[in-house]
Length: 281
Image (cartoon, rainbow, N blue to C red; front, side):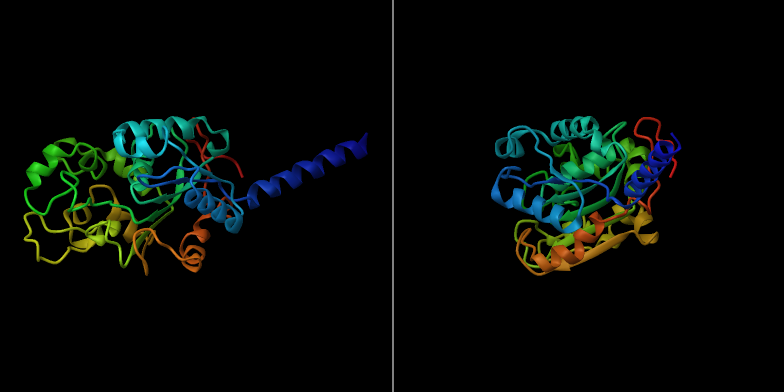
């Protein structure tokens, strides 16, 4: 009988060690005009899983390609939120890798998903965080009032509307352990490409005016979503890589993405999914 008890104790200790050493899972969110089942995104998710050792999932919303174009982003986030809450494997927390427009859904998961599992690390690849100058009402280099009136999702995401600023969005965004913002040097889809770093044109700027860096924008200086707070805490990595829109070479993926999916479960305080209380180690 003593041997049996000893065996159980050893097994429990072994499982505890596994719990500490296994990485948090991650979800990958694809961009517009794509779907999880296409070769590019399925291969990318598999590559990240194979090289990080973490369990990864491409999170599909609706039917993929069509809904990525026509489903309102608010609804996409609602669907994504319900999906992550229903995935038991994510209940102790997870990491996110997002591509292009998928970053707008990713940030919605972080900021808007009530009672969702905690996001620890967020890697953004070619995200249009400050908007696009070439898409109507996505952001503009002219009339900021017109932009705030015409765009419903991005101003909320960036906490831009003074009368509707929400401290909860900022609190959730600043709870990230790491934020990795990857800008592609030859990106001609995200215009300006500095939007991937939260940079954009000055409100009312002429076409030939230079782009403001993130730390020159009101979003940063007034800390609307907590970007400055994260930078001051040393939790933001501004990464510039060669290539066109979301065209990342494997060595760069290994250097700038994979490390944030590896073995961080022993270095972060996990929270109970429902109560948000710290879990015992």
